[in-house]
Amino acid sequence: MTSFAVLYLPYSLIGPFAGVFIDRWSRRQIMLWTALLRSGFAGLTAIFLVTGARHLPIWLAALVVLGVNRFFLSSLSAALPHVVQDDELIMANSVGPTSGTVMAFIGGIISDVYGSAQRAECPSIADAADSSKRWG
Image 1 (cartoon, helix red, strand yellow):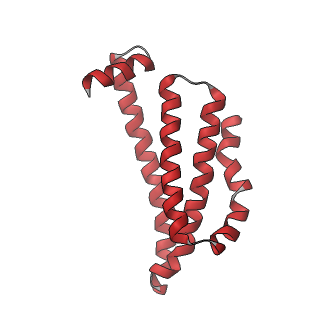
Image 2: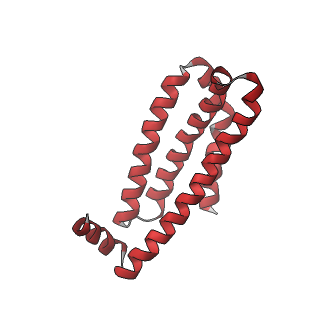
């Protein structure tokens, strides 16, 4: 249940108000800073996972990643009419979210395959992290 809340909380709390800030701030700056913040917090989430942190730190980090991502996606949608011709706007609005979903799905599959291979060679995540230091 908590994972469900973490997934949808940014859409419910940040989504309705994101447009107000996006209209007042530079979309280019929003997209730059949210991309940097999102990658930083995604890295922090990965560190939490590798070090064996339990529920709360992982949920909070994922919540921040999704919240920042909400601003990024809203800015992307708001900027599309300025960079795409009017006759291609409907296609551009559908390709952006769909390609993100497809890439997230492919990333999940790659992660699962890589994780399965790591688990076959190393009995724990800590051993996998230690082994990756030796191999890489």
